[in-house]
Image (cartoon, rainbow, N blue to C red; front, side, top):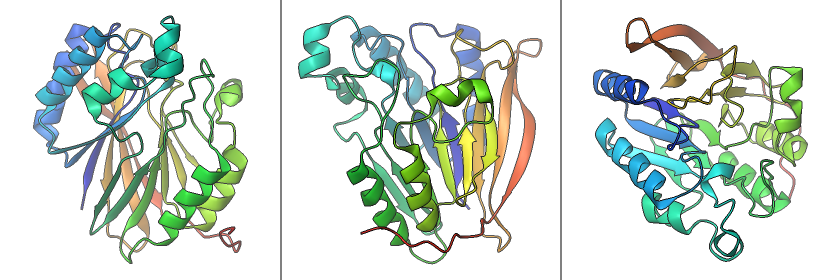
Amino acid sequence: MSLLLQVSDPHFGTERPAVVEALVRLAHALRPDLLLLSGDITQRATARQFAAASAFVQRLQVPRVLALPGNHDIPLWHLPARLLQPYARYQAAFGATLEPEFESDDLLLLAVNTTRWWRHQDGQLSRAQVLRVARRLASARPGQRRVVMVHQPLAVAHAEDEPDRLHGHALALQQWGAAGVDLILSGHIHRPAVTPLATGGWAVQAGTAVSRRVRPDAGNSVNLIRITASAAECATVERWDHDSSQGAFVRASMVPLLRPQRPADGVAA
């Protein structure tokens, strides 16, 4: 059973030091197998902010890290860098691969880069990305849970967040659902939620892990995802919220995710 810690939108440069320390303690206590960084790791993609984020990740002491960039991880005001080398600082800190994969006996996890240098906040999935991921999901071995991680969400739980959905979300939901996706993980909107998808699978949304850029109805939080071997469930998602009165992250909810019923549609060629 794999144990995944999803840390999204830490926005280093706006981090709360006490929350950072609490999250380090939580990671040491939980000892996850895999750390998932679902974008907006920095606030303004500066070298100093990436250095702070990298040092933080090392302190968590998680054996394997899968990261992808968010829209804040591309320089905003440095136009030559944004146009010519938008991911240079991100790649220096977190590796050259913008769409890493992880595979184990019980898990196939695909990270998909949804940022575009010409977009400020919105994310996008190309048709080529959608179909490539669908084919890879369809090739998963028996017993593997199929998980995709993006930055901007494909589905949202609140109507006011609808403008933040990815461009290309409809095709992706149809194709990935038909290919057997179990979970689609995302961040970006700083509001945690777990939502069933009509096309099959679940959308798992993370809040902001350590930033002061919280929403009025959602503070700092992370997700702990337990991949299960149950015939009825594909995973459980625990949301851990930072409690300032305790100076610690505490478990706020635990949601078992039933294995989705698959649509009859196939994967487009």
